Amino acid sequence: MKLSPYLSFNDECEAAFKFYEHCLDGKIDAMMTFGDSPMAEQTPPEKLDKIMHASLTVGDTVLMGSDAPPNYFEKPQGFSVSLVLNDPDEAERVFNALAENGTVQMPIQETFWAARFGMLVDRFGTPWMINCDLAA
Image 1 (cartoon, rainbow, N blue to C red):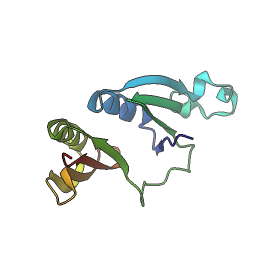
Image 2 (image 1 turned 135 degrees about the horizontal axis):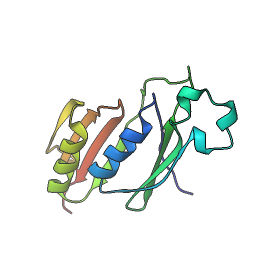
Image 3 (image 1 turned 90 degrees about the vertical axis):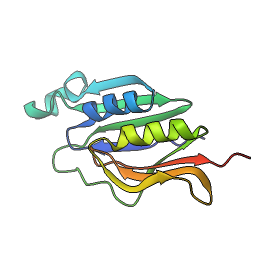
């Protein structure tokens, strides 16, 4: 079994996934618009270029997402996408990249459980926790 986060966006999925690809050194594997899907005829014209499904591979994890159908988007709350890194410098790089034009909730820093830990909400409204374990 494998868990993969699935994020919903308010018509910003394409921009978000290109941003995540850059910040996380990932690779976008798929990005299908509603217009390119079998649902094209049932899709309002203004939504045809919006993303029906996207997937991004980061290491051995897949992050997926889409633009929410009209009137279905809800602001993310009650969860965070958690990234666990092994290198404190890489943890800081990723944190700072994701925080660009976002809101830092807890600056990245050393804690009693981690070499680096920080929390933020990125410019697209996705909450993140960045964790770098203490050396064993």
